[in-house]
Length: 239
Image 1 (cartoon, rainbow, N blue to C red):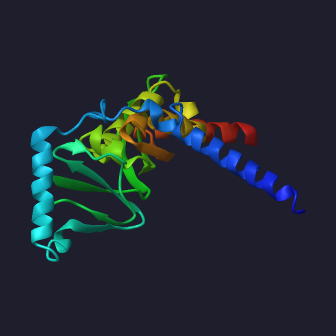
Image 2: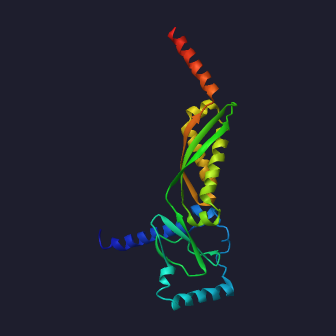
Image 3: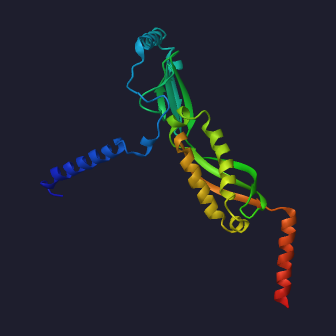
């Protein structure tokens, strides 16, 4: 690279960086459509009472230094985030971590959120198929928290809610299928469930990564009838 081309390369790099920053801060970003409950007016102050309590909390930290460091300094792991509330309101700046963060005594509380992928078994669900056959189907779901703040502020228990929603989604999806489709199109059914669950849990800060149908249990009488039909078919082909 020549000396004359260095300023142009620097300007191009700055333009690309500014464009990327604009995309990240744009109101059309992926998470902009998810409203955090209680954060409609993030610029609203905490009032006179809140200011007084904050000052008193800082005075307490200074007066008890360095013992106060044992209470105020917290650590979260690489796979965790901390959602902090000050006087009941979400602290600006989003979730903290990984690493060290500071919590003021008495006026701040925090909740740790694990960002690792979690799996759970959907209990066997009795489903009436489109052709009026009752089957028992179970599945396994893999999901993770992709927005710690929303998962704490928008839903009481994101994990429990996801489990309950997975059960109802399994029944709803299979209720629109024939028995033959359930037995032969497991991958498409799993993909349809994953799409439905992911869309529904987006408002809870949950990302559903994968859904798998584990087992389809047929009624005993139907199993016998299918076995007899298969046996008759084999005998007919043998003749």
